[in-house]
Image: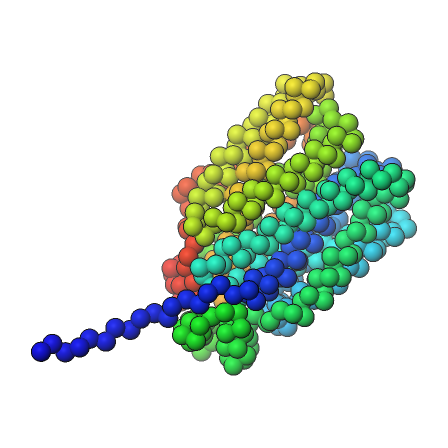
Length: 463
């Protein structure tokens, strides 16, 4: 008679938790404000030029002033996120957004305007680090891509709402104060974000790092994990932190983390070398260059925001099945084709666009934004949050965001001056950079879908 065999089964996954979804959605409001703050200035550039008597260089600096704040915000966000917690840092970010919105709306001169835009930039930079980081740390592997991508969805939704809000305010004909109303609208979602954060938990991985295992266990149960899943996840987190062999504050820039650092820096640089923020900040100006009138340019900008939202939703639905790498491949090809067509249109028509040329630019830029939303836009914040191990994730996410915003500032600051000289050269350069991105995706970028954060750490050879 054969001895009976005991089979140890892995804990069955618990059903999707509404509390998990709610907590992710609230954290992702940092992304909504990120998108709104980023795009709202696009409808005000003409007014700012007139009110503050700006030339193209000063306009570029005015737009980039918020980006200087994002650089600082992204650079320093990792430290308070590690020390005081992810959720506590989000409260501070909500306050910065609110002060920036009210301050820019009531700015009394150019310098005060720059200061309050800088404060908003601090919020954007911090949110780009902490919102996706927080969601990645509360989400199970099977839902992580979609839940973290809610941040990108909200960024895109915020961009669309900024474009739409600008269009509506301009249509109301409120006079010379229209640009102030455009900036002030951000105060309302910032106020809501602050109070909704009280209804979310602290990150279980941060709690484990602070030796608060009981609270971490309770949070995981509340987020919908089954009892068996919680035990396994707690053990994996404890092993990944492994503070007996690693200090909680060990340096990020070491040989052990070279791989994740290079991946995060590369994807962040390519994100901005596509020219996406040039379109976000200067969309009405670009369409005006292609022959559109002021009202038509603002309406075409709303079309850009709508396309961005639709294709972000599509990517969000399939990112955990299709994979990060495949989305990047599709997006890269779309980038190359659309940017090349836009460059061709500007080389062909120059400053004398007819209706056909304007339509070519509009269609090309709609394809461009669809490619971005389906590829880089959906992947970047998910990917940067995945490739770093628990003990340095906040600082790694900060490094990726810092790189992203350094490049965004460079692109946004220089675009008006370069485009004034040659729109064709500008878009041709972006297209060439996307050829390099395609090669990076094909030959270097590893896939991360469907793997727990702790298993990813092992896959990348990090002890």
